[in-house]
Length: 341
Image (cartoon, rainbow, N blue to C red; front, side, top):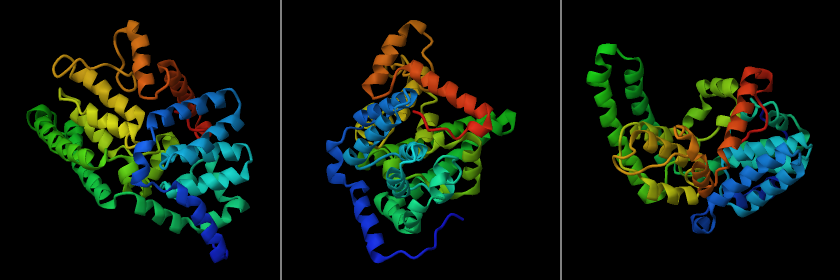
């Protein structure tokens, strides 16, 4: 629908591909890049937006583009949104191309009222014409076989989860819940083994997942906005696993967090589940207030210190952003505002 079919010279194609080479992840650069600092920069971008200093926000995003091999898809889209809002055609073109390299389909970009403008602008025609080539660069970066493995695990996970949630009530806890627990354990062992060998199987390793291309996903993003863009397949399976008392995986997860394989909020949410369901059994786990909230209201200082240690902003800023999102949700015409952390 959005494909530009104009003539593209070899020189045009070569120019775009060369510019984008710096954005393709190389394993040997991995250890020098700290994604805790990456997340802190993204937090500061939010504060720039609230201070109405979009030029500083874009400069920070430029620094991320130059310093980090891998950039999460939602942050590419965020940078594209701000660039278009500022009518910065050069940056918009750069971030649209980067969005393609990070696996965002044309159809998903077209759902957003800000980012979608890039598909209608003349300055992006050549980049759009290169979409197939840039998407192949994305596929060459990720581990497609592992991505298909995670897809197959998610299908099984959802089968058992639906039985627990919606199955015949007399069988929910006598049969289905036990099956669900056993499956959680099996899938955890597979995810753990992948994590030890490659890093956590999230967006950096296995991409955004094949489900991003289906009609259900498009309807989902139309309903909730693109704030939810990202890969959550293995993450949700771990949340299911940690919905009952289990030993933590924090050493491996922290390594993946530092190296960009696991977003900070996902690490925090997993630990919220550990604190909610495993506290005092396998360890004295602490809350980060991303998913479950510490019932001790006097602990907010300590919660914020833990959040800062993994790159997250204060809890009150998380609440501020959630309030903004809820307002957008209540008025669908405003749903597609600039993505916040």
